[in-house]
Length: 345
Image (tube, rainbow, N blue to C red):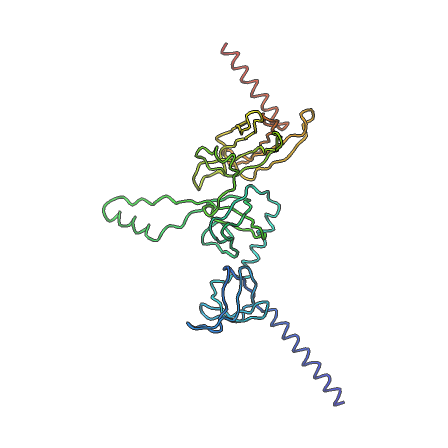
């Protein structure tokens, strides 16, 4: 009996031990490193020894917190103190993962090169949470554009107040807007990067035709053969050369290659568009004309409604491809114009 009682008691203790371990594991806090690299300290003091190294995006277990520092353990078992500002929560990490899934099928609008090391933010705002970073020279895929208000310098309100004291009317300065791009980097991280940190990758052969405009993106429509080489033909999106515009682009140009003169020429240009990304490019069969490249623009009207416009390129001619409903409207408009001309006569 005593032996059976001891065995039962031992089993109860072991079960309690394992359940306690499970509960403690369930309460473990996980955080993620948001700086390129940082050292772990053996103590929170001016003089310390390095106990390990952590890198951007690495998950660590938080063991304790003390004011500015957190004691963490890495996946390799290294432990030490790390500044809490170098860490983001599991919630922030999950939000980045959700954003990545949301845009996984979005078409790439352009590529760009980061000319400085910069943070990848969760929203297009400077004070938004950030987790990953891109290095200088990194190649990025651009998915979406957005604008947000640039933070006002601390001295700006004081200047307005001093002007009011001098008897001048205090005029609130207009907010300064800045552009952001939703990017995907080569490792697959997704988030928002400040636009001025990026150089959009536009082929040099057509970049020279910018004429003071900002080339937002370029797309290869097809290739033509010139002697022993194949030359790409491009659709290019352009806008005014400033941030904060209410549209993604307001002009498009199609550059085709003249095989006789061996140069690019503008085959089509359309201005005054309230263009919205994304733009899509594909191939479509047009019967006798054969398979031709097509592109679809999304344009916003004065009421905010977005409609799609399809165009086809039968080199060197670009024409609008009208849907059945649009064809009837076009015929009606053309008939109305003819009637007006007849009345004037």
